[in-house]
Image (cartoon, rainbow, N blue to C red):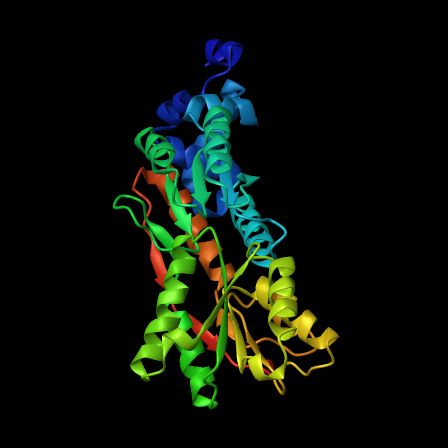
Amino acid sequence: MDSDRNRKLSIREVARLAGTSVGTVSNVFNHPERVSGALRRRVERVVEASGFSPNATARALSLGRSSLVGTVFFDISNPFFAETAHGLGRCFEASGCSIVVAETGQIAEVEKRALLSLERVGVDAVIVCSTGGCWEELARLRDCGVPVLLMAQRSERPGFPAVGVNDYEGMRKIAAHLCSRGMTRFCFVNEGIRATQHKDRWSGFADELASRSLDLESVDVQWASGPTWDGGYEVARRVLAGGRGHWPDAFVCLNDYLALGVSKAVTELGLRVGADVGVSGFDDVPYASVVEAPLTTVRQPIAEMCEFIAGEVVSSFENGAPVSGRTFEAELVVRQSA
């Protein structure tokens, strides 16, 4: 073993000498609670005799991994994506990994550049909320053995698993709730990029109204400058400037970020959110429950989704199994705003 000490063994050689797997050696350093006492001591004896040092560079070279997970989001200023980044960072950190965050602004070309950059950096996995225009780049990563998971949207392509809620059913629940309160005149606050989840939310809303024989032509579809606070605020100011006879019973927003902007505009005009005009969102971001008129919305279980994603990715690292997707329940949360 003296000759081994002189040349600093790799993790694979440590595993061979200890008569175990690379994953077990990794767990001895990162998750010792997962390894039995006898096996852990056997690995430690080899490590002590060989002088093996599990620094990050050596780990990346010996395992072919960087311990970096790439994440690609529409807009990190959106509380939903900020909370998601925080949750993923926490979950992956517990497994010895760090996340790299890229923002696209829902622009396909920006997303492509972000994915290429993550590929060059050598991330071990990619979690993406996609514009839907980068399948070639995602396929290249996947085909190189990089686990790829879509998040917060349905997958439109086979071979790309997704983790999120059923956006269609979630928005049907919103529509059913508003109709049950006697509301029939709606302003649907949409956005121009038309991401998969946004298309699904509109379809769910439209189908629920149709099932109740309500005229879709009467829905005032307003296109926001973006799915943001500013976008919602601008739409509400524009619609409410038309006079009381043109006001909707409720603004139905694609997400909470839009709904928060709408609520601000309604309040500034001296109206009461939930009493004079209803407002609904989607996501149940942390701010949704603490604003002056707490939002009626659909809850996306961010913490549970992040834990599931991290579990799938880390399991893929350890045993080479492909990652799987999961559809979580879209839970209606009824509050004061509608």
